[in-house]
Each structure stands twice: as structure tokens, then as C-alpha cells.
Image (cartoon, rainbow, N blue to C red; front, side, top):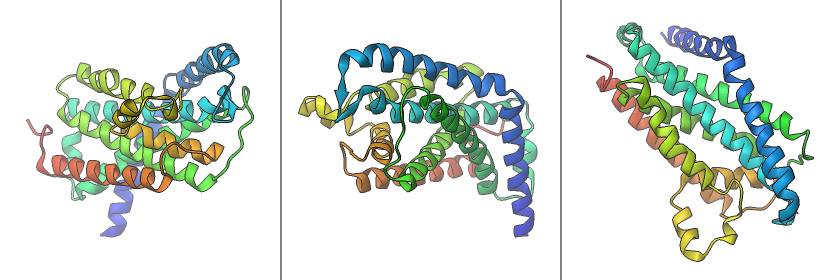
Length: 256
């Protein structure tokens, strides 16, 4: 029976990977172009006037944040659009009635989001090499952070798709939630520059902890405790997985 579950997981995962690689010019190229513009405008033009931040050049400082920003948006959008499309076209019902545990189905869709997030993250990292010398301080933390972040926002995309009633609903969360959280997550500035009150407010933003650990993996310094940040990321992943499993297993938003 477990062998059948593995086959089911692989089938969904391969379908999801094929989905975004088949239209690579729409899924993989735009993030590279967008991040190139960020590096040119914020890193090169603006950064040359700012100087150093945290003991490194401004370009080096924002590079980890820009990579993480691309991972977040692509992991989320991949699962949200794919899962909702399957729900809208009614082919999700075939998977729901198949003799496969719901966690296998969730893992397959989330795996597709993680795969796209990692691909885009790698592409943006290669783009960053044209603008700045990247030195890894802790490779293990970099890999762990990218993986946990991809899982977290892939689960978020799935939950968004469960509740979405139209394709317009898919864009609401990225526009009004993800974008503000990302821009206020310390991508372009150090939290130490903020007044104490706003540092406390920033502590409520989960993206802060992801970028914090990711930047530590590259540069070796962090604004917040690294173990605390990793613990919060794991906690969010567990919470969203539990919620996603509950929604899918109960058929909430999936059965008409």
C-alpha cells in the first residue's frame, strides 16, 4: 500500500513540476528579470549612495532578501494557481475520491511549489552573482531556510486556493498580504535601524524571521536569534500543514 502512495505522490509532483517547466518563459524568466531590475535600481544606483549596512555593501545586504522574496512569491503562486485550477476544472474531485490519503495529495502539490521556489531561488542567486560576490557563511542554514520557507508559503497558497471562489481571489492575498509582509520584512533595511516600537511590530511579521536566518546563512550576522527564527518557521509550517489537512480532509471549499 505504501508503494501505491509513493506512486501517487510522484505522479502529482511530476505533474506539478511539468506544469511550471512547460511554460518556463512565464514562470522562471520573469523573476530573473524582476530581480535584475531590483539589483540595478536598489543595489547599484541607490546602494552606491547608501554605502554599507551591517558592515557589508548595500548590494551584499539586500541580495539574500531579494532571493528570499522570489522564493516566497513563486512557491505561493504555484500552488495557489495550480490547486485552484484543479478545483475549478473539477479534476480535483478524481484525486479526492482516489484511495490515497489526503496528506499524500497535499504533499504532492506542496512539493511542486517547493520545486518551483527552489528553481527560482537558484536562478535569482545566479543573477545576483553578476552584481555581487556571494560568500556562504552557513550552507546548511541557507538550504534549511529556503526549504522551510517554500513549504510554508506553498501551504499558504493551497489554503488560499481552498477558500478562493474565483481566479480573482487568488491575487488578493499576494497583493494585500504577501507584498506588504515581504517589503516590511527587512529585505531593504536592517531592523536595528527601526525605533524600538517598530522593532516590536516587526516581530509579528513571520517573513522577518525567514529573511533573518537566510541573511545569517550568507553574511554571518542576524538581527534576531537564529534558533528562535528557525523555531518560528517550523511552528508556522506545522500550523499551516495542520490547517491544510483539516480543510482538505473535510472537503471544505472543495465539494459543491
